[in-house]
Image (tube, rainbow, N blue to C red):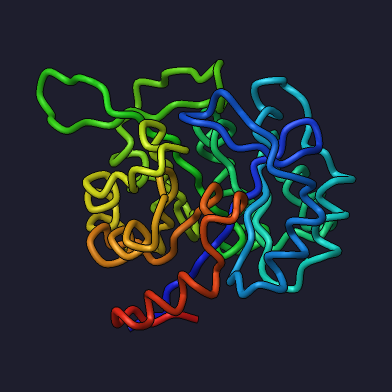
Length: 257
């Protein structure tokens, strides 16, 4: 069995790490460079850096903050937010990223997934999907893809499960599945959403949105079928340490890195 990963997430807004609920009502969680160094030294397997307003503000990602963050970590770093072209991907890789996460740009131009995978390899391309439960006349439950993370999130009409399958087919090497309903609630991941996607794709699925306890991480991995779990609030605000979570998961039989 493949070993599972714990991945802290740095949602960065105006150069500071923030955390909200369902992508709004953000509160400050610290300096991304300081937090990156902390997680690097605290047993994190990887780190994700999202410039969460780059797409909604229609601007490029803050390269200087990425460079300073990358300089502090010696674990894989995924960077996302405002990346619209293959050249943008290259710029982030040059700045120190190991993987590139795309969300809004991939929905607007799915060929970007394939182009990025061809140039840098599928292992570098992460498709991030922000999904929300919505009513559907023929399917229940049903999740729709949203873009432009935050208060200005936009409906796309895309079926999140079908989009995940297509993303894998287009060349994405990993999928981050973020439940907009659960995000920041400490209530646990959307396990039905994770199951629906992990059972349909042959690439790693990363659970995101809602982690509040080690039990939630366990459920995301063992019930939801995720290969890794993304978490922010429980680590940023000192609820748990990564070592605590890993020890508990190992005691429950989960193979951890």
